[in-house]
Length: 99
Image 1 (cartoon, rainbow, N blue to C red):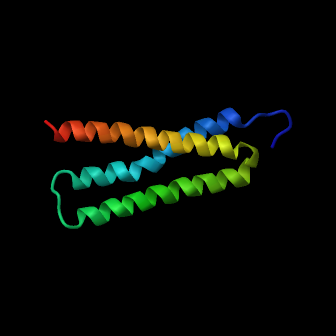
Image 2: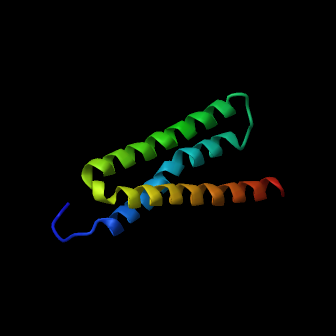
């Protein structure tokens, strides 16, 4: 860590960014699945969940190497951004399905 520099804000901002990037595979898979539910839709959904987890775990591992002192902040904000994006998306999809 650089002398006198606090990585907390940068780690938090990067955590939010990578949390949203981690949500991208789920969003893309839902766009493919939603128009026509097929038997392969569940498999595609599970693959997208796995890819999201791999992206977020990879980002946390990179952070642990680059700035280990900011790992907690990065990890918390990554998880929060992912959960908020998933919650908003789930709400919008369920609202759309209910119409």
